Picture 1: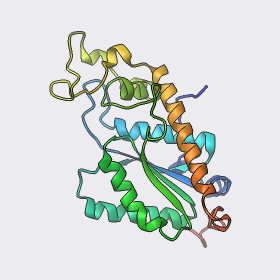
Picture 2 (picture 1 turned 45 degrees about the horizontal axis):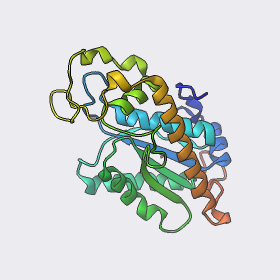
Picture 3 (picture 1 turned 30 degrees about the vertical axis):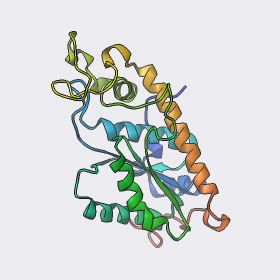
Picture 4 (picture 1 turned 90 degrees about the horizontal axis):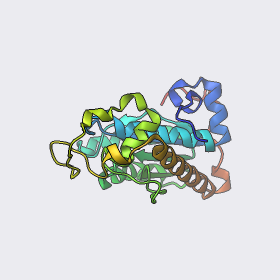
Length: 243
């Protein structure tokens, strides 16, 4: 059964050079999580979106291979002209590191986030030597068992699975609560007090992480054979220094 702990062995910032080289040569995919710092009800952490995307991607990497970049706390409400340039630079550097598949995943489920990631990826993938895509965390797995909302059933369940110590359902009180995204609750979806649980989150994470892993495999297999292997001879000073 899927566990909530995120292995440091798949998180780029925790890897030693030889560990990165081994994982990248086994499966040359990297996953980049995104999300804003924003209101998620009185009961949830402000960084919920990027935290859930990061957790799901760690589960993907644990099961399918590849590594996870540290989460980016930003969103499409920022000035996109310089932001897209910065993200293109990041994706290009990940390509230069040797990765063949780059998947950006947003836990903030608005179309602008997908556009932001894919616009930044476009010049990086145009030569056909790498594949990349920007998606929501449930773009590939949305179903009755895996969906999204705003700080309601689904997002609260994700946090109850990954970070139960950061969720306080008692902060919502026991009386009636508006669920239309407006003040005072700022929550949209099914009442988390009735519908959220760690088990609901676990199942959704299980489905989402597997769907992203299968997509990574599909993208790698779609490359010409000569471009399916990790590009660097080694993660050594003479070949690589920083992203």
